[in-house]
Image 1 (cartoon, rainbow, N blue to C red):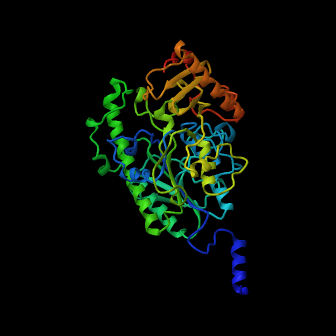
Image 2: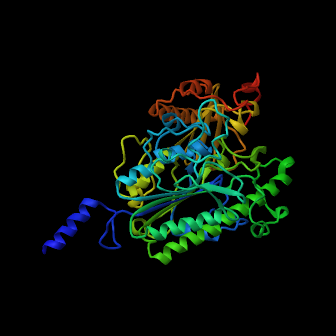
Image 3: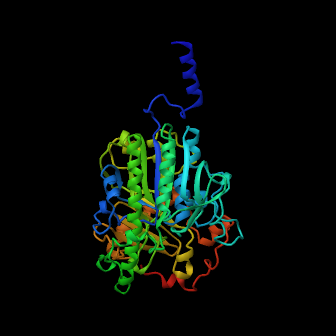
Length: 485
C-alpha cells in the first residue's frame, strides 16, 4: 500500500462515519415523519375506503405495518419525550404538556451525533415548555434556545402551533421566518433540501407536521373539496346525536390527512431521485389518535383505540426487504427508539427503558410483546378533572384492552369480537378469569416500571409542577359520575 493512500485511510478512520468511501455503508439514513393526532383506523391501507391516501398506501406495500402501535401516553409532549429518550413518562417527567424536557435527557439526535450523523429537525417541537409559574402557553411562540434542542443542528422549528396557514418558525440563529401557505408543504420542501445536502453522509431528520390535529377545517381548499361530509360513514360507536357534527369534523380531518399524504409522496420520490432509498430507514407514525366523536368526544388522552392506536410504518429496503409485512403484537412508544437504533446497528444506551425488537424484525418474525402499557398519570386541558378526566393505567394486548383507575377495574374489551369497544366486560362475573389475567399482566408491567399508580397530585408535587389554569379542579363526585365507559 502506498503511503498517501495509507494516510488517507487513517484520516477516514479518525474522522468517523461522516466520511465514506462509497455509497455503500452500514449506517442507514433515518427519517421520522410524524403526524399529530392521526388515528390508526383512518388509512386506506387499513381498509378505510373513504380516505384518500395513495402515497401512504403505496409506502405501506413496501413496509412493516405495525397493526397495534400504541401511544403509551396518548398526548403530544409525553409521546415526543418518550420517543426521543426511549423512556416512560414517569422517568423523563413529561406526563403533562408544556413542561420542559430536562437538558440531561439523552435523546435520539445526541446518540446518533456520536455515530457521525448529521441531525435535522423541522416543524413542531413541544418539548421546551415553560418554567414553573409562567403563563401556561407562554413558551409556544418563543424560540427554543440552542442548549434546549437536544442535539438537533439543522433547525426550522416552532414550539407549538396549529395555525397551519399563518405559521412561523425559528432557525438555528433564533431568527424568525414565515412558512409560505399551508405549512406542511414548505416544511416538506425544507426536508428535501436537508436530505439533498446530506445525501453523502448518514443523517437523521425528524419532520414533525401539525395536522391532522384540529382545527379541522383549515386544510387547503383543493383538499377540502375532495370530501363530501354528508356521504361519509362513521364508526358505529359515534352516538346518533353527534353524527352530523362528526361527519363535518371527519371531512376536515380527512382533508388534512390527504394533504399530508400528498407531501409525503413528494418526500419519498425525492429519495428515489437522489438514489438513497435503499439505505434510508423511514418511520411514519403519529403521536396519538383522535376520538372524532366516537363515544361522543373529541381528541385524545382516553384509553380507547381511537385515542391510543396510531399508524406506524417502517421501511428499510436494504435490511427489511421492499415488501409489506404485518406486525400484530403491540409496540409502545418507548420501544421505538431502541428498535430504530437496533435496526441502524447503533448501541443502545443504558438510559433507554423500551425494548429493542430489531432482531425479530430483521429475522422476519413478529415481535415478542405480550402487551403495551397505556397510562395517564395526570389528566389535563380538554380532559381535565372537571371534564371527567381521571388517572388510569392499562394494557393493550393484541386482542384485549384493560384499564383501571384509582378506584379499581374500569374497562375491559375483547377487541376481536368488539372492535368498536361498545361492550365493557369489566366486573361481569363470566369474565372474571379474563379480568384477573389482564390485571396480573398490568401489575407485572407496572412493577417493571416501579410505577406506584399514585394520584395526579402526588406526581405534580414530586416533579414540582403546577397545574395549568383550572386543571386541578375536581367535581366533588367525579369518580362517581364517571364510572360508565
